[in-house]
Image 1 (tube, rainbow, N blue to C red):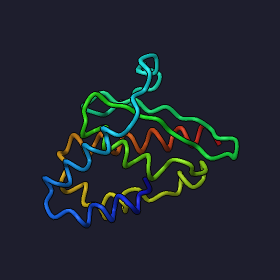
Image 2: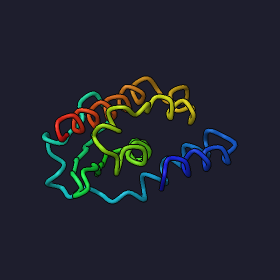
Image 3: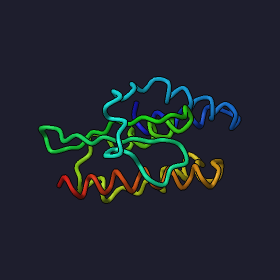
Image 4: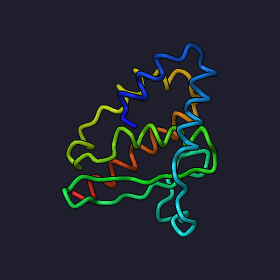
Length: 134
């Protein structure tokens, strides 16, 4: 699912209760990471929940990420972040204004401070992977 599809779906939903359910559904659709990848090497620091992000460099030079969390709503937030970042070049990831996309979804104003911090930590981790892999 693309970020534009997610933004369109968000606009269609009237209440934040429905949007939270949608975020959880996005998380439920994500494949789980194999248990060996639930290691400190892939753990994202700064998240209240357990979060793991694993980068992969595609043959065309773009990056893909797999992610997982022990909390369904956080896993849904990971799905949103990955819909923005997957299959982008490291340069494009470095230049992404993910905050603008979060604002379009009104995520910042409807998430708790700890979830906002975790979301920012995920984005920073992805950008650091992109920087290291370019």
